Image (tube, one colour):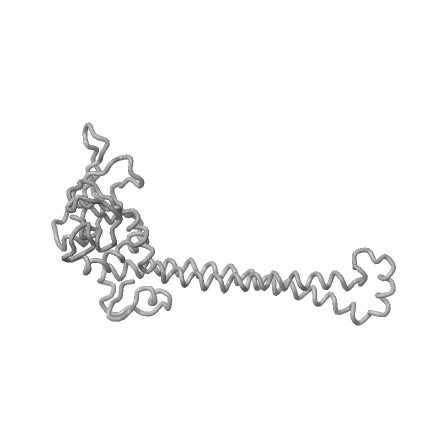
Length: 267
């Protein structure tokens, strides 16, 4: 997870802490902060639902206990009249329904309480995990990089993938044009952040098969990765949260990738 002057984007979202001056100008930090804040909001909504259910359960238990009080005060008169039928009391007229209702309510409340705790624990763990590792696992599996430089192919680490890439950028799709006589589109991207190389022109153009999913459209925000000697991306990520997660593992892997030989995971 990205940091700015010692402030972690995930923890800042969880605690709703004020961001340091200048943090909003850091595109990587703010993208991860927005992604984490959206996840935290979903978790809060789930806890509110569980809390409301617990409150409703507590309110429903009140009238039942109140209705049982007259039975205690008038026990000698009512007990004998209820004794005859012995219909469903299992040997304790009037008492059996009361004994069944209490465990049922206790079990329901206990289940909801356990669900609340589990939601909090699992949710917090998931937020911490998706701070970087989730994005890297998904993309390292998706980016089975073809290491033409070494004549081999195989699943590379995140730094290894970057080492074998000729272009990794983030930007906005400004044009999608069908290529005559081919099942491909020519995509023009207005680049606002370069990862590899470190700098470049304002626009880049590349080809994409029309059969891919998802297809890119004008106005899409996208992060793409193109391997050496390739003309089409093998990574194209859309959606703010997904881009933030992919950006995280790329930023973390960039330093290690510098000077690494493609296809070997060695320097």
